[in-house]
Length: 195
Image (cartoon, rainbow, N blue to C red; front, side):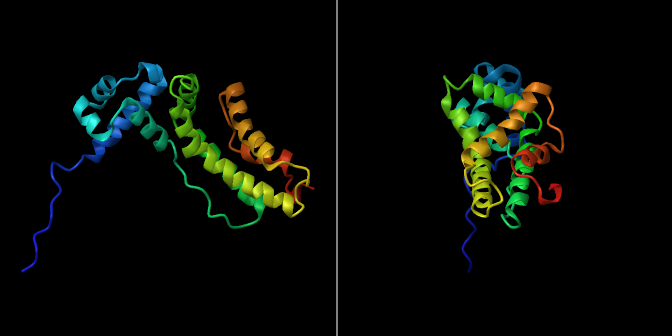
């Protein structure tokens, strides 16, 4: 005789409701900012109740962090190939994630809330920015050690310049062209085919 399967207590969570809550919270962050977002408004926009939201998220901040976590749309490359090609792949990945619908509006909200809720911007940095900066710094350091970049170059400064160019371009024009990664990298690390 086989033992009976153990069934978890309660009703299973509805993944569609999870997505609706995140979509509603993202819209609230984009349109009203963190200060204007509430669990009540998120629940109403998602077509559910505050207790249903609280079962998934213990606080407004945890909802916001979940939205931030959902901003990642593409995983990083596997790390193979020439260093310059890997740097280009990291920058393309960063652009794709940054231009995901509403990501820049959420970034603005997080910057505005930095002094009141520093954990939100820290979550964004930790989940989206820092993994890409770390990968980029590593391939830039490899390029320096291989003599492909000046030995006086600082990988941290170069990474900041390259990633910062995406934000600067967006603020200046509300657009980041498809080939921006190539354009930005070319000024720091010329392609051997261009020389």
